[in-house]
Image (cartoon, rainbow, N blue to C red; front, side, top):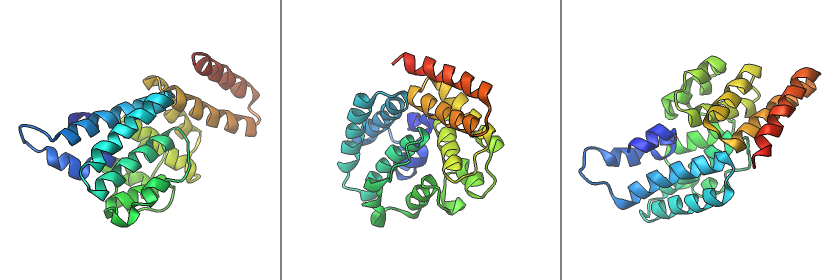
Length: 218
């Protein structure tokens, strides 16, 4: 399933779903629908288009529930949580929690990772193992090729109190390069808060100008 890998959410919907792809000549409709819906959901949410994001997530969840497989539905809910975390929305992942008992250990580990709690690195996708193992930082982020994954990892570092200014910059730059307005505003806001706390008035003024530009196009 090529688009899931390119989008960076293969860490959520990959696993069994990607295994289902294999070399079969035709993919099940639910798999094709889930693949395209998750990509559109992530882009819409990170760009700040709530209406489209909600509609696409509903399509994603419908495709997953059609399988009757709670593990797949749990992965879908982690998709939503991961994308929210990327935009620094740290609300509880309650929909996943309701499915946690039926979720594989990899999904439980990923949920813990998103929540900023210790997670078994070996149960996480390779992109996150260094960060989960305490070796995180800007260098580790820059090694993550997929932009969604990179910003998710940066948010986890911030949530767990391990984000230095360079981490914030990498995340803000990544969101900016992708044109993800909601994520851009969130990460610029995080940078602004840090600049104000440090008394860096010129930097704070520069960040306010950037925030005004990003917000002005809404």
